[in-house]
Image (cartoon, one colour):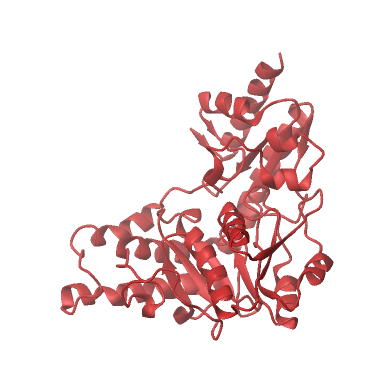
Length: 376
């Protein structure tokens, strides 16, 4: 198998699994228990919290564990709205992850007004559009760091500064950026930032939300006193430990990530664009993650091509894994190229440091064969 869908999920690294194992076997207590067998696990959770905080330049106290990034995204927007009930306007973009877009659509049914900022053909946002969209009624701006389908990077620092200057809370979905680009919330005035472990070699089912000190936060999930009363539910200790260890490893590997992954991504991208006729890159050539390429194969339905790639052992996708069962075209590519059929004819390839040159050579050949078979 050649796995080129790391934006969908990543394998748990051996070091992460090793760190988790005791909490499946011998250390299985409840951290909220009064006796030492359970309560000692609070220290383990705090160690993991510090590791996750270090990855984004935060203080441990400002990190709250959640079940996933979908919960974190929803919780951040919810908190901003609860803190300002008189403000019933949300600003987001047309290319956000479904966990943001679908929540915003649900809000519209409750009477909220949502502005969906457009992007250009390269997937880039115009800051002037953001400045014009924010009003006195705006409670929160929710704009991602890196797009999950194209890898395109938004100008997060400038977005945060615009929000700060206009007194509006800013939530950033940083799921695809964590572990791939430097994130330092000490330098960028983000109020809420969402992460999930399974994008950087931790298990699925564990995420985190960074909340800037003094930013409002009310519980999205009500329950016990866990997470300082801000997120109820018995802690998933093993997965929290896994996310902490994975964050530690991601922080250590960050300086080498770009130079290891970008050449392989470029070789794959250039190889396909040169070897396969009628193909087109989706997304800005340089302002994107080092690991992501999104290519349109004109005249070929995404699903048909993915089936042939899968038969040859090549894993890729036609967009967000969360929407893989949907018959709808990619909303990201549709927003970028509304007059084109590209949203139904694209494939996303996303790499990681485990991908080899041999994988790339083989992948280009597999794609070439599959496209030829479909066009003959």
